Length: 423
Image (cartoon, rainbow, N blue to C red; front, side):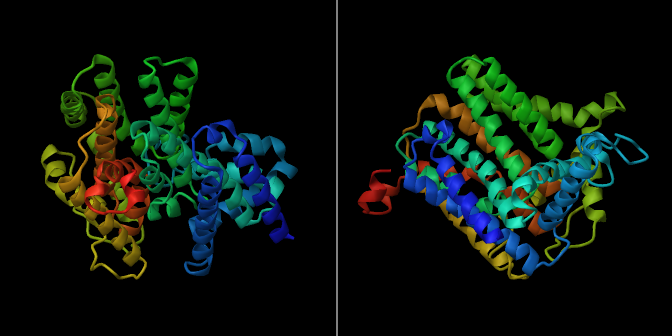
């Protein structure tokens, strides 16, 4: 019965996909769009199958589905509790520990938002994980469409590289397709960036776009607060550069100098806001967790400028360069290392074969994409002590770096293929 339901829902969602105006207006051919959607669905099914058959029970993806079944039952037996428990804290500290990595209402809320979402899917899926994955990825697919619509505006006429960067990056499509908060972070990030880009391009922050920016920021903060900390200076620098017509390098340099001063000195003036202690405590909480198969050595941070500066190279190395090609234990690291090596090759090709033509109006956005991605990767490298988690977290932001690389490489100099020459 579940197989028939899955097939029926898949046909319905494919039909619906071709009729949603936002998707239709993206400019992707219908057959291409359907193949991309099916690839997304296959990725979601794969991560679910691998999670239960290789890693076994107790993994995050299936746990969320199991908890969602309990929530669906609660909707039947106690509707009032179903609609209020998302806002109820059962911890002694109440609603404290807003940045805590475990044992706090706010940390639980990250998963509870997705659980509540999946509990709604259960009305139609009867609790089946793979049908829920189908619904979940239909929603998250909008994130890929949004990124496509964004980058095709930045790089008009480069459809193939933009499709690859926005839909087909292996780790991105894999980790953003599991029933988990990662997919929601990916979607909310796309909404935020696209709404900001549209507002700056049209030189008007209207009510609709402001609402979308605020809503996406709230969800990002609730789902993964560190993303908002990385976003604030980069968003401000992007808007400043576009509005004031300043050179992007000057705007980002000035904003980051001021943000750096505030980050390292605020704790000296007030006991209520201590950014350094926040990152240090976050790292400590991660280090206190049980070691994973891909655990790596992480130098403990101290709440000082010297400690953060000394640890920065290690943090960037972990988040941008690992796993290395020779890090093949466990074997699951091998495809991830090969993917990262491919991106490093792209960077080399960009350095030697990059295109010169680019609209100056898009300069601030490209600076934003680079600065934000490097900032969030620096934070990931500071606090996360295992490669599996680093790769998963990093994967959500790769389209912001890899798509511009693919579009700015002069492929005509590398291959005589007529199809590539057109891009």
